[in-house]
Length: 113
Image 1 (tube, rainbow, N blue to C red):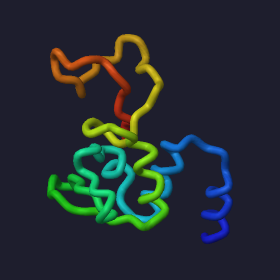
Image 2: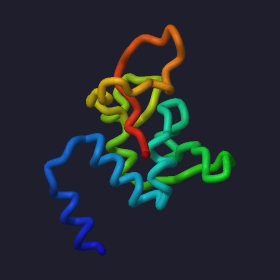
Image 3: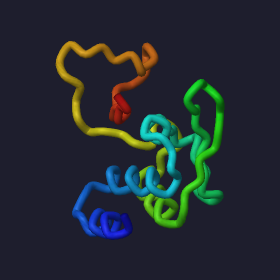
Image 4: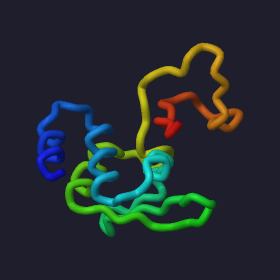
């Protein structure tokens, strides 16, 4: 397993993916929990984030130094919204149920499913 982790570390991938995989590995959290993290729910100095677990309970995930080093670069100067954004557009005709009426358009949430 360690060899696989070392191989992934050396890949030339986007910061978003690198941070996501590092957080998943270090926290052992479920992918949908990590993908639903908002910037307001992460506490980088404490290396933890507040998630909504399966069943709706609020819980904390904890990560290590690798994720802690990547998160500030990923969330640079953002104070709200999802941690993991995508630049891709949704297919034509896909309703955007995550936006509040009157909310300004911007990057979308990287969906867990």
